[in-house]
Amino acid sequence: MKNKKYITLGFASAALSMNLLFSSSLFAKSTQEQKEATRLEALAKFTKVISIVEQYDVDDVTIEELIDKALDGMMKNLDAHSNYLTKKDYKRLQVQTSGEFGGLGITVGMKDGALTVIAPIDGTPADKAGLKSGDIILKIDKKSTIGMSIDEAVSLMRGKVGAPIDVTIVRKGEAKPLLIHIVRGVITIQSVYTKIINKNTLYIRVTSFDQKVAHDVAAAIKKHKSTTTGIILDLRNNPGGLLDQAVGLVNLFVSDGTIVSQKGRHKSDDKTYSATSSSTLTDVPMVVLVNGGSASASEIVSGALQDDKRAVLIGENTFGKGSVQVVLPITKEEAIKLTIARYYLPSGRTIQAVGVKPDITVVAGEIKTHESSFSIKEADLKQHLKEELTKVDGKKDTTKEDKKANKDIITPEMLNKDLQLKSAVDILKALVITKG
Image (tube, rainbow, N blue to C red; front, top):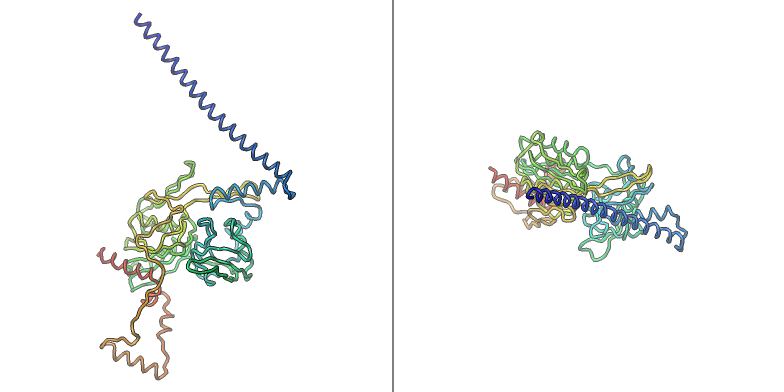
């Protein structure tokens, strides 16, 4: 009898298990069916709206135009960097990435819904005309940018070399909008500049992340390695560029650990980029300069060096562009640009919308000096008077020519005109002393 009870209980347990399994299977099936039904309802609603608009709209709009408008609106509403590329847009993008074109030389982005200059590229028409990081573009020629996508704005600003364009901007501190006249030019970019400060500080300016940035910076470090006691890496107004170059640049200064990771909706989109000791060239003290025009790849570099305690960041909060976009063709002539992942720094923090906060905030400006031009010491008196006689006698003053000839040196006078750089030099001196 006892055994029968056990047998009965066994059958009951098995029946209960089967019932639960069957219920779970039914529940999963039911959920899937509900999702599919909801999806079909949504598609039916979309089709119905398209049909009604096509039939009753005051203008004679074709089904192709309606679909294009619907796709455009859908992609724009996902985020500031996703968009639908029509045949014309897709062709422009291909020209931009593989050909030569006339342009202004600025990188733009959406900030708080406004078309904003991330940074003008050094030496380009926009830079020479006076456009600045943070300027909000209100009009391109006479066309308002309100509701305009980034790609639309870029296509309007691009054009034939030598063709003029008027850009109306709103600038912080200005009482009214400014009209800036620019003549388009061929955009050729030198991405890496190096100079020497105080004989032993290597100043490296990176203006954008093109295909040779890591190589060029490595060459500069090797060239000056024997005399360099500290490095200043200037990423101000650097709008970004190639991710592999950002990773390669960090790896010159960091020997191990994560540099940056990207995480998306699917595991296949997740990637981690790590440093290797074989690529590291120097461990001297380091300061990095950033501002509101530092975006994307430059935020990855500055944020990674900050997280790794490898460098002190000086300047202003960066732009906050930390997302990954890919171009996915949908026909032979059309495509979509879609955000598939976000970047994360070694500590796990995101760049998107928040940017990288400097360790020491220093606003842009210059140092006002009140030193008298005739303030001299006893030891300098004889030489100083000789210089004054030279001026009276009309002999050639070569001082200016000497300064001009040596373009590879940043003088104390130059430092006084750049408060952020001057602060970087002073802090680097302290770091060098501390390291011993």
